[in-house]
Length: 137
Image (cartoon, rainbow, N blue to C red; front, top):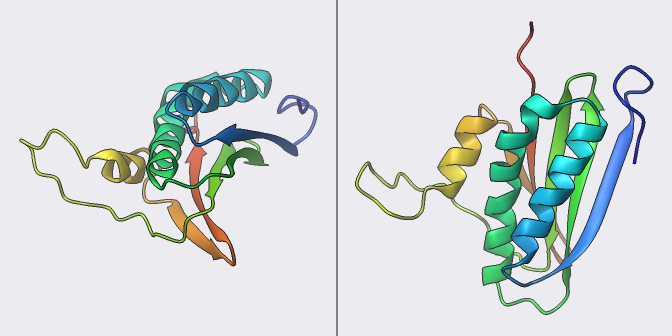
């Protein structure tokens, strides 16, 4: 794992996960461990929610390869979470409404990242990425 914020502003962790429901828990553990190691514990709760949505969506694609979850420490107090999968189906934010019991995931990601998320299309799939930043003191 990379050095903490006081030592370096570069850090990257990555994990290849199967297309199985249990991979969401593994992705959350990766986020928690990396953020603790980088001294960014205040981002853990949001990071776990943010990584769960694209991992869950990737599991639903039916792809047979592995997905890749990456955390990149991009600045002193911010990280980028990326989930690369083998599907070119684009995620879509839905206004689920207050009574809806599902389809809130990307709206929550949008809220937690203050709109700082997106998708990069690749020849054999896509990467959904989301940026999280701590609040200034």
